[in-house]
Amino acid sequence: MNSAFIDFMRIRFLTMLAYRVNYYSGILIYTLNIGVYYFTWQAIYGSSGEIGGFTAAQMTTYVAVSWMARAFYFNNLDREIAADIRDGSIAIQFIRPINYVMVKMMQGLGEGIFRFLLLMIPGMIIAILLFPVELPTAPSAWIGFLVMLFFSFIINSQINVITGLAAFFVENNEGMMRMKRVVVDLFSGLIIPISLYPDWLSTIMKVLPFQAITYLPGSVFTGRVEGTGIWNVLGIQVLWFVLLLIPMVLIWRQARKRLFVQGG
Amino acid sequence: MLAIDVKDLRKSFNVQKSRGGLKGAFQDLFKRQYQEVLAVNDISFQIPQGEICGYIGENGAGKSTTIKMLTGILVPTSGHLSVGGYVPYQEREKFVKNIGVVFGQRSQLWWDIGVIESFHLLRKVYRVGEQDFRKRLDELVERLQLQELLSRPVRKLSLGQRMRCELVAALLHNPGIVFLDEPTIGLDIVVKSEIREFLKDMNEQHGTTILLTTHDLQDIEALCSRVIMLDAGSIIYDGGLDHLKSQWGTEREVRFKFGTGHTMTQMQEWTAAMPVRWTVENELSASVWIPLELNVSDVLARVVGQADITDIQIIETNTDEIVRSIYQSGSAERPEIVSADKEAVGAT
Image (cartoon, rainbow over all chains, first blue to last red; front, side):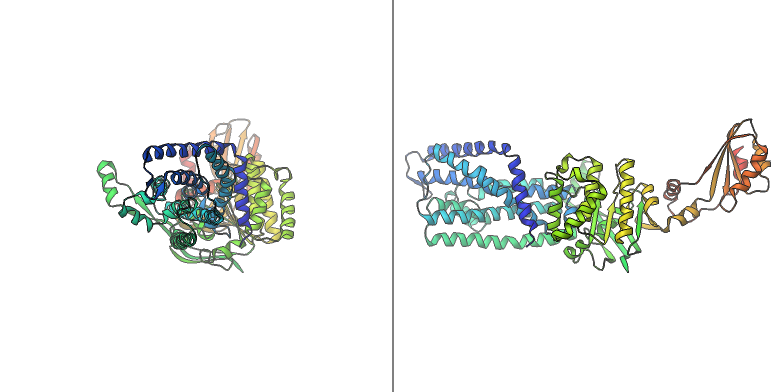
């Protein structure tokens, strides 16, 4: 592997660090989101003990960890790629002996490491102090969650890359990128856990890649999936990682032929 | 050996056609119409190693499209293409290691990081050895006087400073073939001539092949032994700059200022039996147009003896004018030479 990849990651991390003040507000926004959903779920639960297989305490933990996971895996690779394509600077990427998509993924990872250390961990500590979050006690839940969190990042970034590259084929993929954002937040189980959807809808969601981003790692963290079950849900993530490579490579290859550098 | 070999190269784009009006907009929503636009129309040329070749043409003539095909960014619609022994769009990653590209209108440095960091990153991207990199960098930095700029972030550089850094970025891996797409655009005269000198030296020392597009014909005059001129996707001239000048610059102008007034008839009498023509600005100043085959001194000898001259100026046709007239006529074929007499009569 080209050693420049590590540098792309490092430089993105340092650039983010240089602008870190911009991201302090992020901690506040994520904490606010957790608060809104926490109180909403409190009201919905009332005196009932369990909804969709979640106890009220599990739901609080799920909401907190899901939003904080999003603080880590979220990135704007789709917008960056679309911007490169629209303003024509993608041309510069083609004259370098290095794979553009890999460069973008590594930049995303650099951003992810920044978000993990300076957004997710401080945010999680604040959430634990403010809300009754139950941390898992089994080491397997911790290890399983962290490994799965990494795959959440990869799968989300793969979806972002695919959406971004769509700018090669349509003149303006702004709408597509917005739709993707809503679909990921909704179908990944961030806003409502998958098990709370009607049966027919949750069946559909289980064959889509989005649940692998939030719902599956969240289930491990809340202890709803334990022991060998963790291997199964991790398996689903790995499967989606491999499956999503196929459209990524195909679209990239096709894009090479379609390339129409805008602006002369 | 040939550095660049192009045969019947063609690139066409499908451009969406928008129909006018509300009705048209609705129709476009359901069924789009496309129009094929031919950007480069079956061009062929060969550039041997070590040559500096200018590639000129009006905006939209297809220059950039050609450069993008030669650098592997665009895939040609048809035709044969070989650059440095590779087909650019096929073995892209191997191919680009041997070329350097500067786009005057786009930066290839990273905006947020220091100049030197950008260079180090490029070293890794191109997998240049540490020692080779040091040597090359020192050489380039010294030649282009970048010492003080190295630690600055790219976004804080002036255009001239940035362009010199762009050159270094494109040349760090010591490419054999360099493509420059309007490298001097927007630069002041000092930086322009610095860059020209630098390119010339590089060509002489390393035998680098350079293909250069520009709108500044002084770039061409300073650097190129050969020009390829493009118009509407086709090559209309391919050859030496001298040849172009001698073919189009058919006459030289000598401008006189007189101390006392002279009439047109007087002037024609001075040069009687010579195939020259006069144009008169006013009583005290006039020009004589002398064909290339005639000696300027012969004409001068006749005039100087008879007229009261205060100033003489000899003007060579410059390339700008030649190129402008070629663009206007759309062909580099030599125009018919207008008979000297007819013009002169018309001017009185």
